[in-house]
Every structure is written in structure tokens, then in C-alpha cells.
Length: 563
Image 1 (cartoon, rainbow, N blue to C red):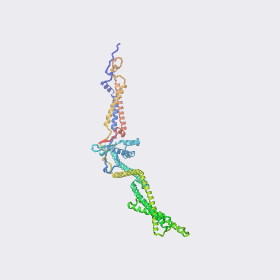
Image 2: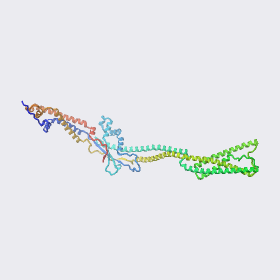
Image 3: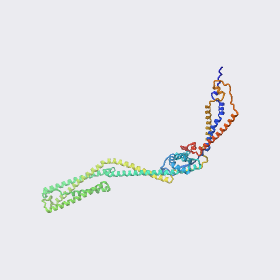
Image 4: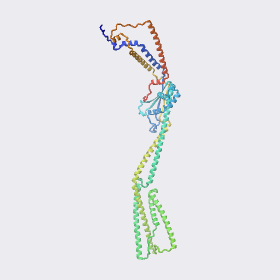
């Protein structure tokens, strides 16, 4: 028996348009079920989801009323940074929960959610958006700055009330925060001023102690020391000349007395001029008083040389007084000794010749002058050495004093700067207390919204329709993939290796038709019940489900929006 030829048809490669229509006709009930269930669920959600109303208020940032060139503000931050700081202070769990309790928010969530979840949900429902007017042809820092505060809720009155409450909180918190920052700036400057003032006082005391310790060797006294040294050099020359003349006069008188003694022989033994220490000190005191008078005619009484000269005079006066007392005591002892014992021989014989007496008196005076001049030269040399040492030490002290003074000047300049900043901070604080600084002002209070902000029910229906069509297609595709039965003769011919002799159509009896009608009725009832269950479940899920609405609505903006 010959093998029949194999027939290759286009249906073997896949169903065409007619095949797809056949599949749709055959699987219409299977496609209809997921379509109805998905579309019913989507429509139920769109219908039963609560409406969300968003109320907004517009707040203007008022610039400082006093020009900033006159009073610099203590709070200088960008609007975004200030709003972020204010939001962190306002949107705290305590304040948000108080608002929620006052307006009865999230009653359903309170029974099932923790406080943290309620706070997070309320923060998601609050929208803060900065609005910058870019149409103004002014620098960015001089443009009008506005921001909106919005809140979404299921009740439009609640949304407007919460929005106005939040606006009031932002206005109050902004004023309180600015006053707090101004007071904090003032307190910080007070602390710094106290520290700098103590440091400045310590440095002033250090400079004063250093100058007192090294008085006479300071840089500002260099010229005075040089002039004093020059004057001492002149005094030394004058004292040397006076000493030389006194020595010459003394030698001349001594020679005259010696010559008179050898020629006349009338003068007894002489032990020398009777010059006492008191006489020498008195002569030195007269010279110092003359020098003091000369200094006082040129300088004031607080001049270092005048002060030093007065000290020397006081010391020498005390010395003269002591010498006189000692001399009086010695005279008293000598008188007592003379009363008990007769001296063997006077050390000095008083001549009877008036001329010799005059020479001896002049010799005594010359001896006193010579001794006083010698003492004066020694004193002047000591003073010259003192002033030379002062001039030698002046460069070292000048360097040390420059370091101390430089630190002092730096600290004083810092103190002056802090004083100026402290004054500015006081004015800025007074400005904030009088509400003349930068403030917030509501220019558009929140009103009852005209239409809900969400959810977008038409969009939900479109999404549900698309999902329903997709579910129907997937159901039909899966059914066709699972079903391995042959529906057409062409499919058998394309698959089986043997020829098809004949095709017997489906034979439906009256009993079969009755059974099909009954099955369809039961299926219709089951589908209706299922659709009711889907609608009821959607109602239970969507009714007052603010969380689902929040998920279906767009997230609040996080960037600054241009106006």
C-alpha cells in the first residue's frame, strides 16, 4: 500500500489571523474571567479609595528692614539651609503627634501602627517647596524668596487646618531660632571678650613689670641716657679741672707755709690740716645741691636723673648728720679726757701770726675742696659706668620689649575687633527682638481645596483595563500551551504520519444541551459571586486606606521649584 503524501500547511508553522480568531472564540470564557476579575478589582479600588485633599499656603521671606550695611544680620544662611533647619526643629515626633491628636489624624493607623510609623506617614504627607522668583532681574541674593507649605489629608478642612498650623509653627520657630542664634552669638562674643580682656590685662601687667624692672634701660630712654652721659662727661671734665686746681692751690699753700717756716722759724710742728669727714661730706653735699638745681632748671621732678640726684642728696645729708654726731661724741670724749689727763703735746700749734693763720685756713679749705672734688669724680665715674651699661643693655631690652609689645598690640587689635563685633551683635539681637530682621509672612493662607489631589481614578481604570487585557492574554496563552488536543483536521494531517480518512463532527444530544445550560448558569452565578467577593475585598482594602493612596500618589518634591 503506497504511503500518502504528507501535506504541509501554513497552520503547522503557527496559527494565522483565522487561527487566532478561532482561539479567541474557543477561549472566550477563559479570557473573560480574568478580564472581569482584574477589571472589577481595579474599578473597585478606583471607586472605594478615599480622596486625598491637599491644602497649600504661600509664605514670603521678608528681607531685613534695616540695610545690612548698617546692621549685619547674625543669621546668614541660604533659604534651603534655613528651611531644612526649621523643618528639623518643627517636624519632631512630639510636635507632629500633638498636631495629629488635635486634628484626629490617622485614627485607623493608630490602632495597628507604632508611633514612629505615624510620624513617618505624617512627614510624607507634609510638603515644603521653595519657590524662587526667577523672573526678577536682580541678583539671586536680592530676589524675593517664597516657599509653600502643603499637607494632604482625607478631609479638606483638616488639610487646610493642619497647613495653617504648620505655617504658624514655621513663622514662630523662625523668629525664635533667629533670636536664639543672635543671643548665642552675643554670648559667644562675651566669652571671647572676657578671655581676650584677661589676656590683654595680663600682657599690660607684664609690660609694666618689665619696664619697672628695667627702668633706665628702655628704648624710649636711649636719647635721655645719651644726653645724660654727655652731661656727665662735661661734669667729669669740670670736676677734673676743679680737682686739679684744688691740688695746685693746696700745693701752693703748703709750699708757702713750708717756706715761711724755714725763713722765720716761728711756726711750731704742724701735723697737717685738720680736715674731718664731716667737712668733706658737707662740701660734697653743696656740690650735689648745685647740680640738682641745674637739673631742675632743665628737667621736671620725675626725670630719672633728678630722682637719682635727690636720692644721693638724702643719703649724703644723712651721712653728714651722722658724721656731725660722731664728731660731737668724739669732742665730748676728748673734753672728758682733757679734764682727767693733761695732753703731753698738742698735735697742732696755733700760730700767733695772722698771716700764717690765714694760710693755714686757706690750706684747710683747699684740702676740703680737693677731697670733695676727688669724691665727685668718683661719683661721676660711677654714674658714667651706670649709663654706659644702660646703653649697652638697651638693644637687648628693645628686642625683648618688641616681642612683648607685638603680642600686646595683636591682642589689643583682636580686642578692638571683638568689641566692634559685640556691638554689631547687640544691634542685631535688638533687631530680632523688635521683629525688624528677616521674618516669614503668610501671603496666601491655606483654603479649602476645590478638587481632590488624588488618587487619579481615571488612570487607575486605564491601568486596570491594561492589566485585565494582559491577564486574559496570559490565561489564553497558558491554556493553549497546556492543551495538546487537536481541534482541526489540518493539525492532525500536519502531525500524524497516516492519512485522515474522515472527520466526524461533535454530536450534541438534548441531554448534553440541557447539561451545558445548567453548567453555564452555575458558572455565571459563581462568577457573579466571585466578582462580588472581589468588589467586597477591594472595598475592605481600599476604604480609608491612606497608605495605599500615598503609595499611588507621586512623592513630594525634594528640589527647589522655579516660579
